[in-house]
Image (tube, rainbow, N blue to C red; front, side, top):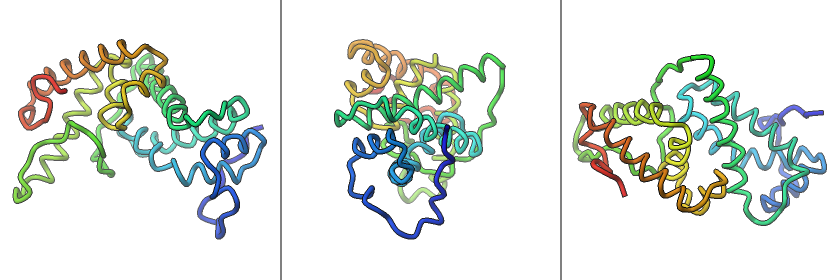
Length: 218
């Protein structure tokens, strides 16, 4: 039976789970300890939501996917092998969940509306170049984010997944290979192809020249 996600707002004190490593928390989850799930949510709920929001650009969808992710994490915790690679496991489960949802939506021909980003994306090479004293910079950054998202949605899903993990989540090539269960060379090919396709798509927009990576990102 799947337990309800813990209500984090009502928790006043933190127990021994706070001192556990991520691997230890997963082992505890596998034994049915919801306090361990609460601690994992404290550590990773924000990251899971940001990733899901960038994929779907919809607050309610991102919340639903984030909740589904932690339920899935708890359900499968007993099969988790504690080898010190929780971050890789985290992104593998989360990426699979998000892109499986995208594939289902594409099959049903559903269209997600593009909304303004409530969260600043971190660690991306795809941010627009703007002077700090430019009063239009905030608006241009928002326009740039929407342009990047629109370009990303047009990419093949496996190419987009690789780009999301590298450019927005900052994963190393080897980590991306483990998350996507592909070879290191395949990761390099996907990223090279994705950057060329993205640069080509952005070059057709009015703000395309403001992006790092124009004409082929590193």
